[in-house]
Amino acid sequence: MDKKSQRLAAKAKRRSMKQAAREAASAEICRSLQELPAIMNQKVIFSYMAMPEEADLSAFHQWAMEKGIILAYPVTKGNGIMEAYAPQWPCQWEKDRYGILIPPMENSRLIQPEEIGLILTPCVAFDENCGRLGYGGGYYDRYFARCPQAIRIAIAFEAQKLPQVARDHFDILMHGILTEKRLYGEIS
Image (cartoon, rainbow, N blue to C red; front, side, top):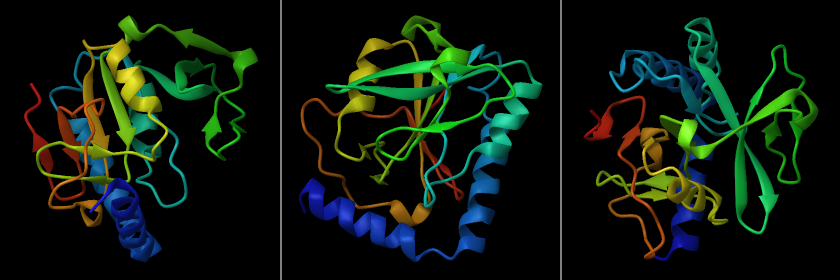
């Protein structure tokens, strides 16, 4: 199956989840994140604000802020370029051209890739070998290449798992994939 077909199949599976199941799975993912040894001692985490059908990390974000961790969020600039911005709190989120919530630029600090210790990324589909299928723009893969020191964890629901995601030479493997059921991969 090619990437387009895999995206359609995985999105359909994710969409078929009932809202209550999605909320419970998101809560379990947030609990698991808080217990990951890789989270401890992180100063800056690059995360995301969930789209309606994605795993919602809001509870984890609240916990991380209480621990004094700086949270940065993606802002796309076009031409495949994405940057990480840490908002001042409280934050009035805005929507970008894709409908993704982003922090307001006038009240946020640009985070340099070398400052980031861990990246939490959404995905459309994944496999147990830590292959990640994104939305197709290549923004995250380009950003991963800019911060090779960062631990990369894709966040997904177990329903999004495929036997093997289609990959191109520029697709970067994750160090781990975290679902409500388990952590795939080896993260130290």
